[in-house]
Structure formats: structure tokens, C-alpha cells
Length: 300
Ligand code: NAD
Image (cartoon, rainbow, N blue to C red):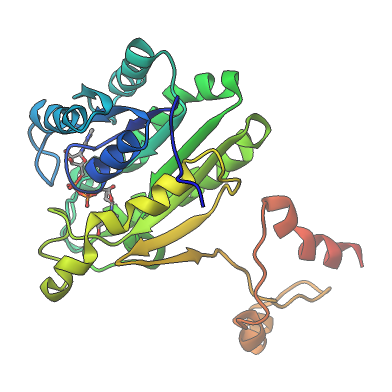
């Protein structure tokens, strides 16, 4: 089989100064893409700023014979997001691929979490992905081509102790991804999300140390690279990935319970088992499809 290449493509990778984003940037550049390496350069909680990490990754790419430019802006501000996309336009004339990967942690139990800690995490993950995608969107639409990957998390999909802010943000990205997939369909813009597990500075004190070697960032990048390749036709999907394993995550609905008469609280109690039934599960592609069983019931 032929190698997947990205020659002629321009990619923006946010938070690419460390960890997963760095690996995504290196891989795409090694396969021919021109890359904007964005990173604000703060610590794990988003405090501080430095142009160093993005610049170092750019130097690494260039040393390997690739093409890249650094951008040190903040994804969470409209000016920062615009500047990130403008860096791609100025350096390479266009943008084809957006990988929203920048992220921070401010873990606290829900009882102790402050509104500031909540807002700071939502700002980088959700607002940042919204803003950078939005800055790129007119260009993707105009050229009828785009590939977007948003970085969700198992913590968002399934909840995690001490991460009310982070899990809200990461599930929010699933909604954003699915809507971008709908709105981008007409313009050949595909948007997907990943829920990775990898050993980085973000997780080194959270994941079991025994598996550090097997949870390398290089085990996540192949999925991301595939999703942003022109040959990928899938959109609006979410995949968990790490340690060599990839699986699709489904948002699915059970068979449910319905009755013609107005529901009472007792009806809910008496039909609780049917309401909670897990089989058969249906995966809907849009809200219209999801309304199907209700419309059928209302029309019968
Ligand atoms: P990391 O800390 O190594 O990388 C995150 C990068 O984002 C850092 O380089 C940081 O400087 C940058 N960044 C932070 N705020 C920014 C901002 N406002 N603007 C621009 N850049 C900013 O961590 P990582 O593990 O590589 O995380 C990458 C992404 O993957 C994050 O979104 C994270 O939430 C997600 N994720 C990681 C794991 C994992 O197991 N490592 C699991 C689930 C999700």
C-alpha cells in the first residue's frame, strides 16, 4: 500500500510545543505538510508564556528537512486565534488542516473548584477550539476542503473525579465536532474528535507509571494523521486512542418507552426498566433522525 502523504497541505497544530501536539506536527511535516506550530508556552495549568517550545519544534522539523513556522499566540482569544490562522496564510498561502490540541489542567474536587478554575479550562479547550476553527472556517469553505480534529478526552466522555471543568470542556468538544461535521459537509470539511491516552507532562502523575513506555504520544498521532488526510471521508465521529488501541465511541439511544396518554410520575416509575433498556441501541446521525421514534409515536 502507498504511504499517506500531505504534500501541498497546510496544517495548523495548536499546543504543539509539547506532548501530543508536538508529535502531530512532526509527523505531518515529515509526510510533506507545511505546519504552523502554535504554542503559548505556559505550564501545565496554563500559567506563563514562552515562544521557546513552538520555536524548538519548528527547528526540529526544519532539521529533518520539513517546513514549519512558529506561532506563540493564545488560542483562547479571538485575536490569538486569528493570528494563528494568519500565520498559515502569510507563510504558506492557505490552511487545510486544523488540529485543536492545546490544553491545560486545573484539577480540583467539585466542592473546591472555583469559577475561575472552571472558566480557565473551558476557555482554552472549548473557546480555543471554537475560535481557531472559526478563524480557519471561511478559508476552508472557500476552497471546499478542510480537515479538523478536536481533542476530547475519556474524562469528558465518561466523567472523572476532580475534573468537572475539564470533563465539561471535553464533552463540549464532542458537540462542537458533531455540529462542525454537519455544517462542513457541503464544503468537504470533515471534523472528528479523539479521546487520547498518552504519557505527557499532563498525565505523568495521573497514569500508571508501569505503562509509560507503551503509552507514547506516537501511538496517538497515526489516528489524527489519518483523520486529517484527504482520503478520510468520515466526519462527526469520536475515537478513543492510545497504547496501540483505537476504538470508536458512540453516542447511542436505547429503545425507550412511550405511551399515547400523558405521562405521570408513576408511569415513569412503573416503566423504569423499559426506559433504561440498553438494547437495541441506535446511533443517530443527526437530530432529525433522533426525532424519528418520537414523530412516529406522535403520528400513530
Ligand atoms: P501537554 O501539556 O504536553 O500539551 C498541551 C500544550 O498546549 C502545551 O504545550 C501548552 O503550552 C499548550 N497550550 C496550553 N494552553 C494554550 C493556549 N491557550 N494557547 C496555545 N497553546 C496552549 O499535554 P498533552 O497531553 O500533549 O495534551 C494535548 C491535548 O490532549 C490536550 O487538549 C489534552 O487535554 C488532551 N488529552 C491528553 C490526554 C493524555 O493522556 N495525554 C488525555 C486526554 C486528552
